[in-house]
Image 1: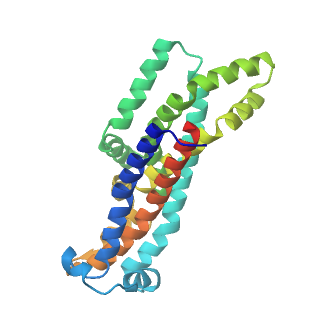
Image 2: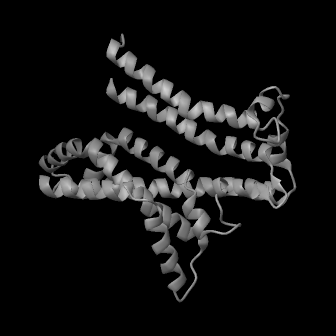
Image 3: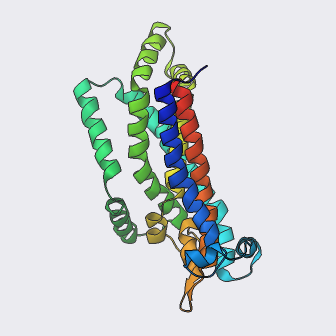
Length: 270
């Protein structure tokens, strides 16, 4: 299938932005691992080395060990948040498609406002609430729950904007076929699975990159890898090579997911 001129231009612009936003920072972070400083010109002329990455995954310092331990924990946090936000958004959209147009627009506007609000509006009340509880909650639970509160409005809004019309049509078809609720949900889910994948990946990426929530509500044994980057800063100064190496590792999932999202969007557009 020959790509149209407008679509080719749009693809070129998006790929250029993806390269600028995604791959240029990755390259600069890798360059930063060549020299323990922030002088980019000196780093560019330095020797290419994998030593910071080797130290990151085999070093015995507290910072290096903590960063390694935080990676699977960060993956677990992001995956749990993405799963819950995707499925809760799915049930919300199935419910909201039966509303009147005025109610649906009002709710969509509310979700958009919640999405645009600073994270401090979620973190600070959550922190105060947790401190007032007569019992202590696991820090991992509070981190996941707080990140979910921040991600869910965006996931619900995006899925509603992408799939509400299609879901409404599918609900009418399921009603004509006299399918039960569970069978209807399964059928609708199969029909919009690409949209669900998009919402899952976007939710996962946002949860993975969240810094404020785990930093405010967590501790050293519950921090994510994004927060653990700061542990390479001490009273003796900043180990820029290790900071850049850790940042490089943390950025890779976002770049991969961004590339996948662009590919899926263009596949849907064809």
